[in-house]
Image (cartoon, rainbow, N blue to C red; front, side, top):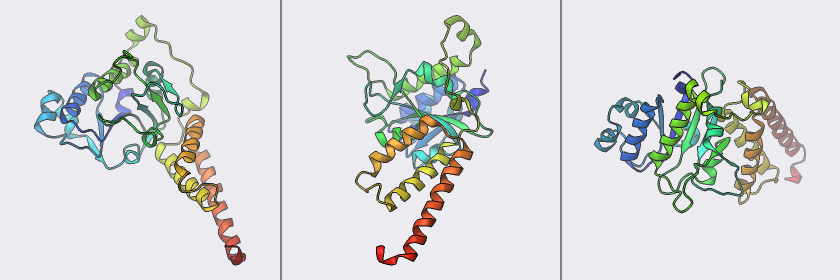
Length: 263
């Protein structure tokens, strides 16, 4: 039952509470998850407070990967789901955890991972950070007080992941699995770092040709990211798109050389 879970990364962005990190480590071990990634943590994840809450899961703290940025945390990942505490947003489509989290357990390309991303305790994930995920989840709660503690949110999602691997739970609870679009189950889907390279190249070219302006680039690129996250292109398709961008850049440079007066 734990094999699909071995490829899941729990990613905490700028966690500030050592107690929370320790609690996350404990619930990860409870639910057979092993890989914890900390993005620019604002506390000591190996200190006494974290170890106190981790109880019998110190090895998860000790093996946790610490990186500076969210893109670094997603290197090697083919799928990413981000959790948000905002129940409504006009920019993003929010889904129920029970509908989305089984998608992280679907087969992926060899040697790739899937990530479940959580934001800082004080603000959650901002729009730029949410952009790195292909799908977003919101945990329904009492509308008069819907805000969940970080470790509580992680615990709920880890429980759902664990139960998705449990045949007894699936049979007894009659869990509905919505059909995935064909591309979503494609093991050759490009990894998130491959997509990120494409986004960076696309943005640079669009700035160069004047389609984007520095003050609007972020909002426009947000729309491109959502478009390609929905499409879930394969590695070959991303390579083709990057080849087109490279050829366009070469053509622009040649034109500038031939017509320097137009610069």
